Image (tube, rainbow, N blue to C red; front, side, top):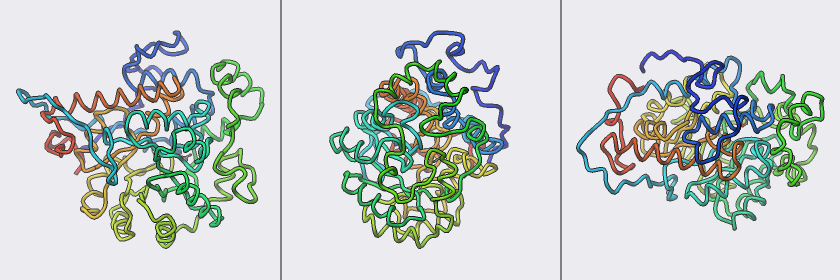
Length: 414
Ligand code: GLV
């Protein structure tokens, strides 16, 4: 593993890396001038209410792991090859046997419908049109049924947390089956919630409380407010009206503490696998020992993930953990990763280090918050183009032939 220092992210105050002028000092650029994920982030920071922007763009405690996820990708160097035929390139591959236009799926992200009105529906539509999977979070604003209805029952993936109310989980799984979901992601790293300072300071809630600070902020986000006025979907669509004894759902941290089951164990994985009966993906594996347990569970894929640096601050970056976990898992299970992917180059590096697939959370949310469905499509186009072009510069034309030989020895984790 190379020794890397983790500088502040590109979007730290004073950074010059953002390719467009600072959003508060310039008008929002048209979509045609958006050329990288950072451009989308800057527009999202301007258009999305502060508490929801901060909810997405934060990590727990010092945010060290959150920053390492991005910085460790930067430290990995690629091998440039020349005079190789670059024609006829393909990024098509499979994730749990399903065809994908590139090895990227949209990650489950909580409160997506607060980044933009009907956010989950828009994300699912953009993913369907692009030919990649969309994952709906249990903690989404739009419901499982909303997504099925608005995508013509096109298969999507559903993510589930284990909660104390087991009947509710069983009903959720049954609803996902009825909605034609083609894989279930079981998140294993959120029995309790990591502390994200900004959420506490902002008084995060969905919908926002009408405090003076929130009203002042919302007054500067007319596009967002207009969208929200036009949709009935403003609370947790999978939960409200479905779970018994729902307490203070508007406070995510209070509700998580009350409902998420801190006693989750591998026996629960077995129970969920049986109840679901389809493709099962285990999310949140950061340790070789856990990878072996994931293999033993009979799941179809595992995701190397530190929850975007939002849970255990101080854990290694996902890309640093990937090779060790891929080695421990062997061929018995597909290994994917998420965390820190802000470009197609990152996708290529993850693939080179053993990830059959990757997931994007923030890169998707920035596009959504900036321009709705068109912004998500733009994010996917950007990542796809960067992946395709970089693969060609490395001398390959087929994503399925990418391996660690495209990386410069000594610059990547082993
Ligand atoms: C939920 O998944 C969160 O990270 O807040």
